[in-house]
Length: 364
Image (cartoon, rainbow, N blue to C red; front, side, top):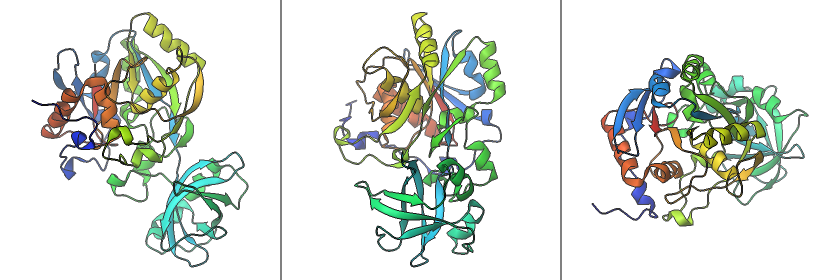
């Protein structure tokens, strides 16, 4: 068998039936299935997420991303034409201005305004039925090179406060539900969500419940937290045919001194660091690029591809990722290309549930 050119994005494609894309979560978070991939033997096992504590060793350490998904999806209209507009809040600038992206008919111009409708009217807004009462205006200041806009809200409050009223959770496009419902508002946040700032969930953490965490503790497994605010880049496909030419998106992340010291102690004792999700991997490996792991925060555009030298992460719990995505490439950097693609082949054959609300893979 000839290994394909791994720099060619076509090497990272696989066939996925539409009915395997999970549009709803399981009844309970810990009802998910778990594929276990053993790198030393190449063996693949089919288990349940509740089996996780038995799969790990005493004194191993799970590392979770404690970011919280913002209600960043916005609906409204152009004040000049009353034409519908919808978009995403990306971040808040130091001066209180927002950075957003969106779409509407026609070309937006600096100086005009968008009127946002409250989240309670978001469904009506998608159908052109919203009343427009109690709107909030965003004045367009300038457009960025990447197409996003810097805008000025007409209300004096933090972005988090305003989004709670005017925004809704930004579900991934493949879920095909524009407005998050009550189930989404509960299940599209992890039990660790504390730090508002993400526009997508760190989905490997969605499987955990207090009961599963208690079982991990009973088995002698420790845990730590980091923060990475998942950005819009997580929805964007690889932008070129060659991976080496792809411009990786940047995301803000942080590791505290407490977490760094606990992780270093685990490594020094010869135990494993188990990253929960690719966002935890990016945070840990970005923080350890230039020095020993210590307290750090900043933006990272780290692109983890086969051949990458992992300084911190030993094992990984992750969901199943989109074909041709940077995330499946990251998985292969840890597992190897052939075993990764075999795992995905088996996941399709065994009818695992894919993507954000889907099942999980444990790489040992």
